[in-house]
Length: 513
Image (tube, rainbow, N blue to C red; front, top):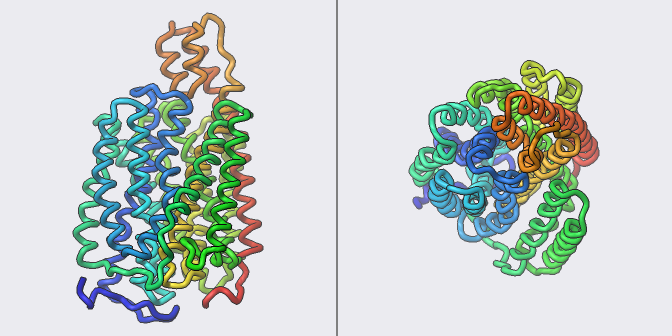
């Protein structure tokens, strides 16, 4: 790498970058777009996948969550490895592996193999995400420019989510569901080419040591907890879920103690003593839980209940995604003058309102009300995410940008896991509890209908018209009742994020201004 491409890390008021820096930002947005498109496309492809591969209720949740679970478990490890061996290098390895496994996922013949491919995508995705945000710290040493760059970077999540349903809807209407995974290939090739010329290599001059036991412990803390949540959502309260939850918490405690006692820890736990850092992480986590939970059940309602095609259902969510982008960019000049402990709660209050609208109008099965709710929800989350991501980087020393970015991305991906596992699990549990199987429905068909809403749709299609229609109407009623409860819980989660942000994001001495 030429010396001209290496940018020195300076103070928070460091030198301003020119065209080359903004071109580098464009390259760094590609993997962000890819990951957000992948998540949204998969949500919209889920009905098609359910009909093609006939997964069980648990397998359907794992198709979504296996990727985010592995990603969340490895993000800290990959962030530390990037700090040690080079963030640009990790980005390139991750991009190559992600594109390769995406091709395998596109042609998976069974639900089990698709889950395995999603695990592989999570492994390589863990290399992508910490590198993008930490490299922004290197490319933009000036805080004013970095604040705008992070807003644009964060808007790529929203842009990808908005583009995903439209592009994915087009693909699903013209090709098999596997085509949605092939999007990774044309997006990652420009990253490899442009990144070679534009992105500086950066690393921590005093990195933490490689800790194999610590890596295993970080995974051992997360996997049992999330699996316990899934087990509880699918099977109800059970001894296995309780044991796994306790195991995950215990291993997490051991991991934290190990890092605190290490002379050079893999993850610097001192970051979490900064109230603004911890508060911003929690805001990210709870906001993503609310957003992903919404995007889990709404595509099913739009496509299966309201009968929209994947393309039209995707277009219905575009206004909300667009408002996430607008809010994320608009909050930048506001955040320069107004304290985060005011800006973030005000933004999140809009998201609470969005969930309340869903709860109040669920029984109407109205596209217009769903669109309006998502517009309001998106405005709040877009503003909050921009401010919180900038605070996370500003609280971390430049040399630890990779680890700090990994923690931020871990919160995001853990939020994605919990959004599907908790809110998705809740709506699944309420759907099963409220579903009243009509008479004359065979036992095997009734079991299929109880698994998922898509299962009920397929079961109704195979019955005589009168019986099938009765079963389908019962399934719709059960699903709608689950949406009400799930939306109210989502509102409570966002309200919790409001309180946390109001308390922890007050300007303090640990924030570099």
